[in-house]
Amino acid sequence: MSMGAYDDEEHERRERKNSEVDASFDDDRHQYRGEVEYDGDESTEELLDQFEQIQDS
Image 1 (spheres, helix red, strand yellow):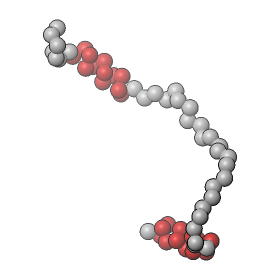
Image 2: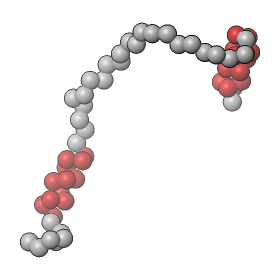
Image 3: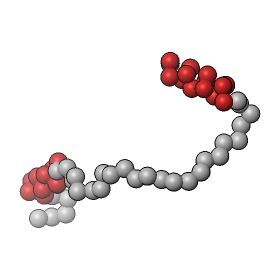
């Protein structure tokens, strides 16, 4: 077979490989521990109001 020739078997092999679902990966959620700091001028009330506006949109 020459370079660039169409290969039905290779195409079908790749299609089968791409159509399979690999569910072997670890899908557990991890728990992260640490701290988050936020530097801003908004008060807690202003942030909660902004959050409610975002939820209503």
